[in-house]
Length: 174
Image (tube, rainbow, N blue to C red; front, side, top):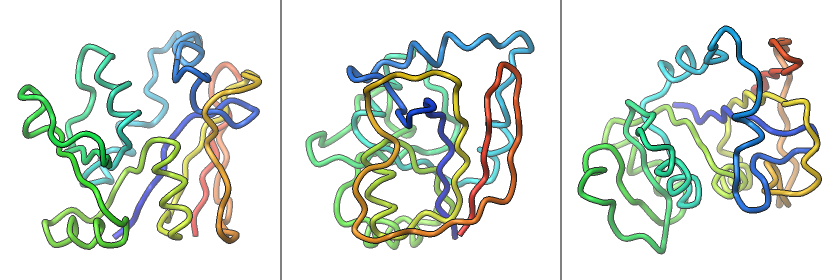
């Protein structure tokens, strides 16, 4: 069982603009149409746990990008729309209990996505590996990847890759 973070962030540590916008990510030149290793990563996981804000942002992409089951951590949304039935499910509660419940349902390796959800998992010391790609842009403000922690969480850097256009992909494990 493992919980993974796979995310891009600006040099100054933001995962989205202040308004939640991701235009700065879409502007990265990608002449080879690379997925930067995402498809290989997604093969390692059983399901995705994301926050409500991330879920609502992904819904605006037009086409649902995930083939794995998505669990949306939310106390305000009670159910997904009819077209999302079978693709996404709303869950709530304390994270350790949620993970135990999902493990009993056969889901063991999770891609954890969304700033607040990642921070909550880190506060519970429930992130095993992080793959963070730094994008060479300073946003100045926005939604931070990391926030206040209740205690330090230690990781070891095991690999760094330089990707086209100056992207720096770092791999961290516990």
